[in-house]
Length: 189
Image (cartoon, rainbow, N blue to C red):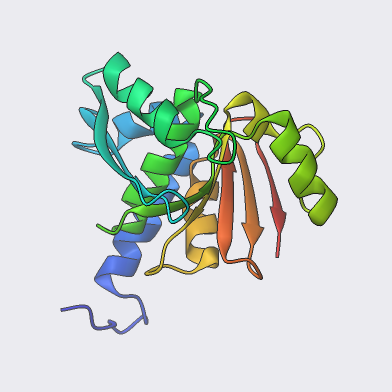
């Protein structure tokens, strides 16, 4: 049962607030997994691409070690689909996305809108939108643009921001959240 108590808080709301507080206290999302009971042993990422029709559901980290084969699978999945060029994706970006997904308490996979971008793809997108950075972290494999049908952009933004581990951009009009492992910063509406 998820009914509100006398103070107006639901049990789930209190648990979510507690989890977000615990993660906010952690210096990085990579370290944040250790603060969540049971979350530090296994890390999993689930995504699909509407552009390629591909899906990814992989455990990429077990008991303190990244799994090289799983990271290669992630690199390929997050490639620039326009040129089919693959770039090594920074595992910290995957950690942030996985930790955010866990905080959102969903089983639905992320829809990946953009992972790695070649400089030419980034330049093309920049010519069409002022929201694309000239030196985007997408070009070095450190960013992902993600969407969930079952959660709002605001909810995704809050979860990613709670990780306190990189850049988080809210793109409400385009219905996605940008997550990267660069300097901690936030932006968007």
